[in-house]
Amino acid sequence: MSEEKDEKELAAEVLKKYDKESDTMLYTGVMAKIVSAIAITFSVFQLYTAIFGVLDAQLQRAVHLGFALALSYLLYPTRKSWSRTKVHPLDVLLSILGAAAPAYICIM
Image (cartoon, rainbow, N blue to C red; front, top):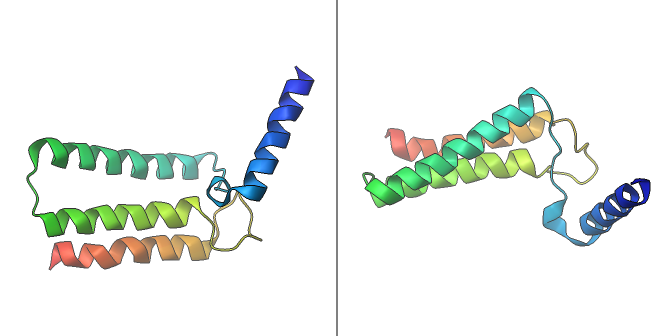
C-alpha cells in the first residue's frame, strides 16, 4: 500500500514538472466549494444554451469568456513560486476583473 502511494506521488511530481497544465491549485474547504460552484454553473449554462439556444451569440460568447477567465485565474496560479494550496489575492483580483470585463458586454 505504501509503495503504491509513493509511486502515485512520484508520478504526480513528474507530471507537474513536465506538463504545464497539470500544475493546478489544490483547494480544500470553502475555496474548493466556490471553484466547484463556478465550474458547475458554467457547465449548466453551456448545456442550457446548447439545448434551448435562447441567447444571442455575442452574449453567449461573453458569458463563456467570463466564466473561462474566472476559472483560469482561480485554477492556475499567476506565478510558479506561489503556494498551490492557498489562493493569492492577485489571482482573486484577476479572476474578478476577468469576469467583469465580458460582463460589461452583457449588461450594456
